[in-house]
Length: 484
Image: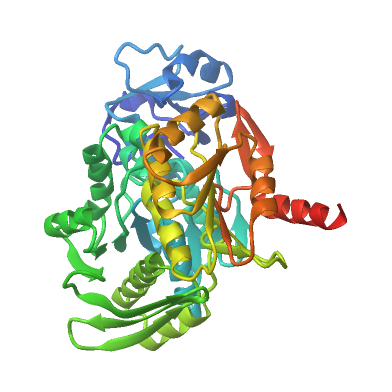
């Protein structure tokens, strides 16, 4: 592709006489091959401008930079003010604008994104549509699973994924849109058919610094979509709905909205409710995932699909048979007289939701085992400690992904919150040993909540990623208890 074609729509300065054929694009200098364009991205730990000599030595024909005085070592120099936005446009140009042939639905919010996107995929497929999914648990093209590193891929990889989906006949793409991806322009220029907002609670303040910045990032999605579906019970949702320039459809439990859940009934087997529209239509909703938050997730998915024109009977029949998401309110089969549930809850709101859900059906005690991630928002640690202590009967504080932080220091910060409650608790740094303790002390009718890891099958300790699947750990410990 000619450089001029690749840069079409990019706000950049370069010499037209330098136009030439470009055979590839990279923003990692280690991936550059002869004839490629190297895009210098300023990251959190490193700056692509430092690697220009590397990239040119490996054959880069052109280099896109932000720094005015950057030396491109004899390659064609392209100057721009925003390399991340430029990369997003370059990706769309390189892959032939695949998003134009797809109906793309973006789901954003602190909690619920993975479940809502999964439910939407199942509803759309129930109606015979071919669907792609992009999110935390991985990417999918129909039934084909593609592992993912991030909730939302970098813009160039994202356009490549759209291209694969379009070539495979995908009609709808349902994707999680993280606040990072919005703030870092990974989804810049994507023509979203529909944007969905679930909720906003404390998370990612290590990156955004303030809740105002966090909300501002989320709001960006609703400047990029033709239509919005918004949770009106959330104060941030009210604000977004009030400012959105596109057509907006709202859902709620507490407030007056376009669609409202009434007569909610929750059990260990799931949630039942009536979805009542402002026009007077009433739909019976059944979803086999317990919890009040499941009513919100079911509403978000259902209202979004109705807004896309999916027949109501297809939407609500699909929810009846819909499967839950791995690591979200996932009950393990243990053949014990107590229950073990795995949930990804890693935010204050997420932890509160899962404990309150279990409280609605548990017959014995709630034993909550959790930690907090290292190198991430530290301000939520005492908050989560206080929530767990207030709502649980017993807590076990352990490690999550401590990364490069001292695991015991993280635990001490959580303890500062739990001490504000009357809850008995124990600290066990080693997560496997913590799980062993929970399993050996649980009594008949209790429910053990293993919170924080969810779908993850690893622990990050230091900079090492170690295999750690809680399903396997529980199975191994219980089998060992039988043979002891």
